[in-house]
Image 1: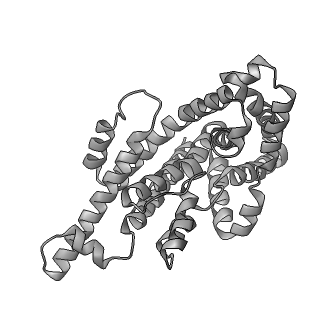
Image 2: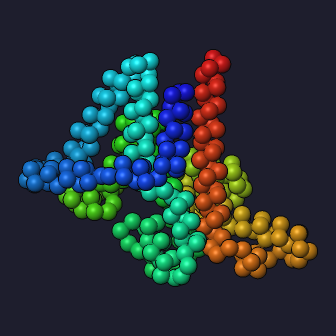
Image 3: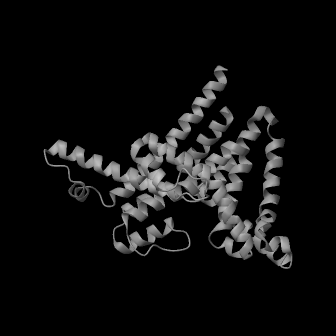
Length: 305
């Protein structure tokens, strides 16, 4: 468990401090070529054309990583396994830095630049309108896909889990998904929903802990979070509710400081542009710190035991 925490922190630090290195490392063209080769070789194969066809795309690379994971576990007192875990987690993380993408939207000098920056939060399609609620949802969906999904499955299955999540995302959306047969792509999306569901639940719990618990709980219930349906609309609802609460609290603090009546709209007008994005990113960072704190507690409990 201690090695897992070290790997997570190391991957986060390297990805944030050496962004150009991380960006150059996170190249997935080999996976697109692999999918294209499979389609060429198995065009008439009924299994490949079916909903479980994505398994043929996932199993070989995952098996290779799993074998390395097992082989390096005890090598050099675990140091080789740790280095391998950091490399795989860093490779699966992202692939873009979420807070930099959000900062680029907030600091965009004009509408055209802002739309270009916003398009990076919507893979495959640029947004049509600048809407605070849609941007907040995009931040939390990107946090799920870029950070928390990779982190959760890394904690559960190690490097193999982190790569499983990233490759499933690639097979479910964007250019690589188009190289899969229609049924296989649908199977990949179903698998991604299955992988996302527990992560979205835990991320929503984190939002409740770092924000207003009652507000998040109410939004979670109303959006169907208590059901076992494979969707995570409740994460959008909880994220938007949390941001609204944050803005309302800021308005109340502003009113108390300057002796005026609480008015969210007027307070937002005096704040930097798109305060929803700023608060959404702040909630995401605080949620990540909660996850790391819980992981650290598990490590301490292990040492104490």
